[in-house]
Amino acid sequence: MTERVSIEKKVLSENDQLAAAIRADLEKRKIFAINLVSSPGSGKTSLIEKTIGALGKELNIAVVAGDVQTENDANRIIKAGGKLVRPIVTGGACHLDAKMVGKALEQIDMEKVNLLIIENVGNLVCPASYDLGEAMKVVIMSTTEGDDKPLKYPAMYRRSSVAIINKIDLMGTSDFDLAKARANAEMINGALRFFEMSTRSGVGLEAWFGWLRESVSARLNQR
Image (cartoon, rainbow, N blue to C red; front, side, top):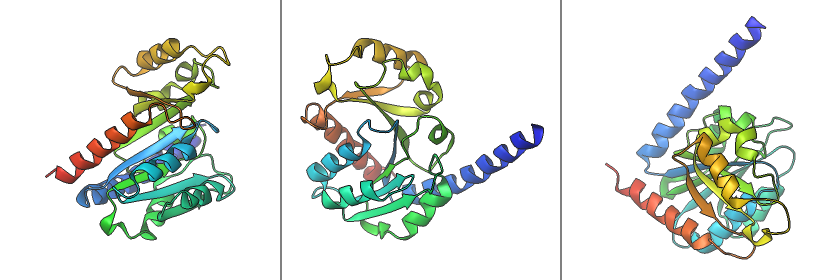
């Protein structure tokens, strides 16, 4: 048991060193990077499709699309207009790590990129432990899930800076309590910034797009 803990610490330590190098490079290039994390089916890929559709001509967006077994999500993003898209198929691993992301970024011309979106594997446990060099984690929950998700997976909410509640157009079709979900998330992390939206109907997306514009601009203007 002691040996197992030691190995895990070593793996995470090596990952953190690689992530720090990626972060330093992204900051040097003035690229704003987010790591989208959620359970499967909450709407990560749909959100990226909508974001590229709305901001693709305004911002230079690169996407690293992680998946366990297929490149389906990457293909969807390319079809939606994504030009700088690299898939990562983990082959069964439950998360992306900094080494995977670093190799994917080597295959992208990052010179003109100003927004990097990393779509992590659908999992609220393992991705919480792995720093990928992003500026911040963005956790997504949907109204088709339980409103107690933040309490069940606190590490992910504690390490995220933004919480998106998606599929609000489906409110009323389940017992999901929006106010309770927000309260549960704020109980874990009182500094979370919230966006409520539906990637299907488009409600709430403008606020998300505006925040991305402001974040990219702030990164471009940083010294």
